Image (tube, rainbow, N blue to C red; front, top):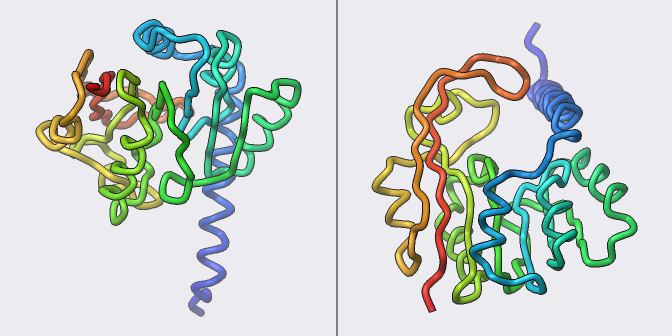
Length: 210
């Protein structure tokens, strides 16, 4: 007997939530990214606004708020939001919201982080999402983030739609920016959960021109 589609969808959602929950348990003790420190140095400001897109358990929020930024963090996963709300309950300079790239209301910002999160932006809405995100960055502001490459396992074999790119397509996204770092990772390596996969990722740090 064929299982009803709504039951299948419910099982997929529950499985997806369980996978993310396991990931967050591993990530919660992780320190902030060294790239975030580099971005802070580039921004030359301790009193600006930062946005952490797909903030997860909040390691980069922790660093940026500690050095003086007002930080807006968002994530679509309720487990991540619950962790961050509790973690930053005593920091009024931190604002946490459950949202996706497509519906978050981006404030004007000095820093925008999208560490390993733009992978999961809706591919059908990516162009308008990217426009809204980059328009939020103030002149002289810094973007740092990762883009899924076309040879990555998750580009075609992930449990939900992903947005992937060729190198030239990523470079074209940064008209109006000066690219400070552009790295390409193309290798077999384990995920945070310990599963081997092929990684193909473009990592970019760029400053918006005045």
